[in-house]
Image (cartoon, rainbow, N blue to C red):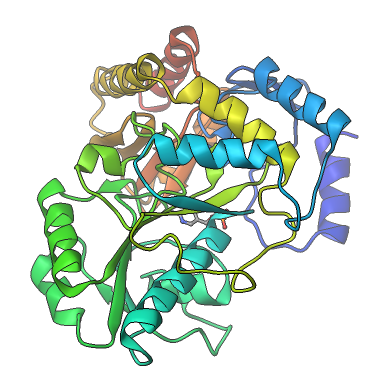
Amino acid sequence: MNFEQLKAQENQYVMNTYGRFPIALDHGEKSVLWDVEGKRYIDMTSGIGVCSVGYNNEKIISAITEQAHKIMHVSNLFTTEPMVKTAKTLVESTDMGKVFFSNSGAESNEGAIKLARKYSFDKYGEGRSKIITLVNSFHGRTITTLNATGQEKFHNYFFPFTEGFDYAVANDINDLKSKIDNTTCAVMMELIQGEGGVLPLDKEFVKQVETLCNEKDLLLIIDEVQTGIGRTGSLFCFQQYNIKPDVVTMAKGLGGGVPIGAVMASKKCCDVLGPGMHATTFGGTPTVCAAANAVLDIVNNKDFLNEVNKKGEYIKQGILSIGSDKIECVRGMGLMLGIIVDADKRSDYVNSCIENGLLVLTAGTNTIRLLPPLTISYEEIDEAIAIFKKVFA
Ligand SMILES: *Cc1c(COP(=O)(O)O)cnc(C)c1O
């Protein structure tokens, strides 16, 4: 089917919940995608930071294939080796405590919220359940994580939302302090606000939040759903902020293209959730964990992560060297980058990128967001920069 035919059937059969680009994608190789009409694109989206090691990656595909032949799914009433291995790698690479596997970012954050409330309940009893998040954050689309998200536009239609969230201004420690009282149990934040516009938090602020959390025995939950698994040039972004979170959530890039999420807790609080308190049918199923293990094999080493930083810097310099006054600045870390442009012109630029064979994302109101596969080559980057040159001419 061509694009028009697919789109007609999509309109008929699929709920209209996404503002989709006018492209139907068909297949990919490394950091290049082809649509159903055979048009070629350099991909700087990797899903939304999901296909972290590129398309048609032999290692991921054979890991999934081998595991599918052995046993595709096992309920969480049994133990499997791939699941244990993923957890062990994550814990040993971070000095955290234990892992719970989910299937998405929002679910991982739900798990973190439950864990924080239970930790507080065990120690302090009822009435200490409020979680402070940041203005302009994004934590997911469930009824709870929508309310955890610090953006008014997400707090519509679906009332009543889960109570117990308040929002502090990012990088303003006094505002955060003023939101904390004796009903607070945790602070949850992204270290780079992704959907909000690729906005890295100040290092000093993050350190102050950590200190405050330690003083008041609040759990510090870091949402690494977008920043995790090598995206920012370290396995987790928190490692560059020099903090020790109590809970870290992840998803997007962990499975290299298959749905997997995880909540990872420090030794202090990793035994808070006991049998029957939290569960999910698909969580940690062997096929997705086999994929995650293959991703971690590739990503979790110094040389690979150094390359992520180098390529990020190379892209940044490449874009800045265009010298266009249409580009206000480029910000971000590793291969999580935002090009800041005039909000009114952004969709023109994005459409022009697509026409010229480059896929990009947006974030916030004035940001073109780049989340290329971490394995993107310098040749592929050069092609992308040449397209940006045309677009911003
Ligand atoms: C994408 C994202 C989520 C939600 O993840 P889903 O897998 O879509 O549920 C949560 N937090 C952050 C920071 C994200 O980028």
